[in-house]
Image 1 (cartoon, helix red, strand yellow):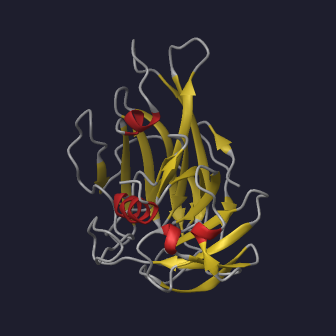
Image 2 (spheres, helix red, strand yellow; image 1 turned 45 degrees about the horizontal axis):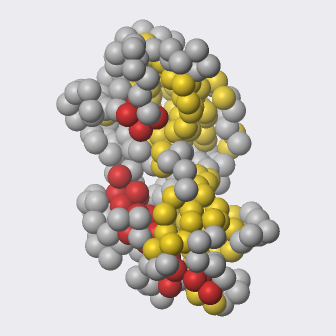
Length: 282
């Protein structure tokens, strides 16, 4: 697991994955299980049946307004000396931010965190924020927030708090001869009431997660998930192979999250759209 940092970094190597997303037979192993693989192509935010390129940078060159984080490709505009990370690694950036009189939610706060990229090849982004969580400090004056950052390609990357210009994290991202820059896959696991994980198999292109089979059991997910019961899902869509876990309750033929945190994949709205469609959150 990536460790918390404050203006410094600690990293862990993770596995990477290499196939594009649509409903296909799962072919990779993580933690001893074959995971289901979804891929999408061509950089849209359409549902899983449409072509989507989830590997492209989200929000590139957006205007820096209070409701929109600036994701800028080019020179990283800070004099702070960067640390160094390898591609396909992760770091947890933990900060306390002062927003003034009103402390925002984590989702709102993310809109004030500018992503800056300086890719070595001049294209795309160098990292992605995978998820974020936190809460107001005990005195209610600041927001304590952790952001899970995954490095994707060589270059330089930084997170900047727009209200103050503070550099929250900056790193030089380098290649490793043993690793290559690869496309990402959306992988999904379902945990039963005992915490045992099963692969959600998308090879039949089901209309929803409830219609998908659990690969190890050979039965539809809805047959082992009672209505009204809360279960944990694990979503993996990152170069580092890092999991994002959420609690979900079945409500008839749809599902709903039981907690708003963590904020999932804020830099990959196309991935969020695919997940939301499958989970019937929208």
